[in-house]
Length: 112
Image 1 (cartoon, rainbow, N blue to C red):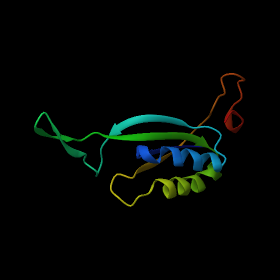
Image 2: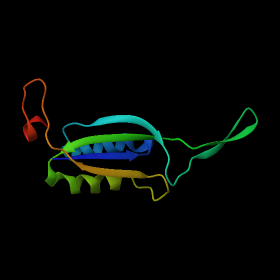
Image 3: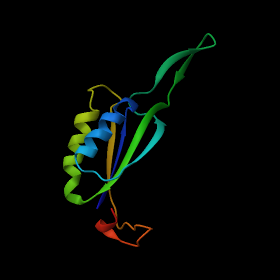
Image 4: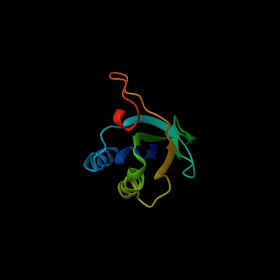
């Protein structure tokens, strides 16, 4: 099993949720996050003074899937989230040792 964590622009959340649901993803967790990378934020005027805002709002989508589902889902996430501009986001893929469904005690892929 693998955990896929995608940090993307907020405006792609709804199309991304639809695309992942169409692909058969049975669950995901979504967080509103802030951060910066190559995008480096933007400038705004606050009370007449120019201020550099370095923390850019993003959305983090996290899902755990079987190993054979990783590449098709990563390709789907990229297809939906890519604008070609700096700040499109990142995808992190990490191994998951085990999953436990609290209600039933099921473990592994059965718990997904």
